[in-house]
Length: 79
Image (cartoon, rainbow, N blue to C red; front, side, top):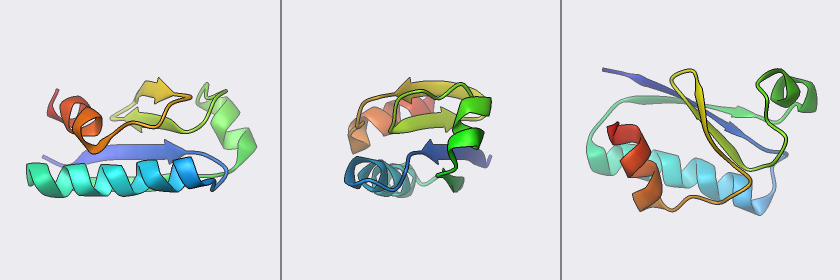
């Protein structure tokens, strides 16, 4: 089953790190993930994101304002 993930942020170091952590978590879990970077402020507002980095998994905002580790992302992707 493919998971759909959005990583929200303006391209800062924390946002890029979260993006890489999502890729690594998916690889370690052996699951297929479609990851989209969202850097547009208007798009962020439409999704209810007011703090970055933020993570959206399969239609649900699961984190904002904190940099999640690979292990944290693995837990969220496993749900």
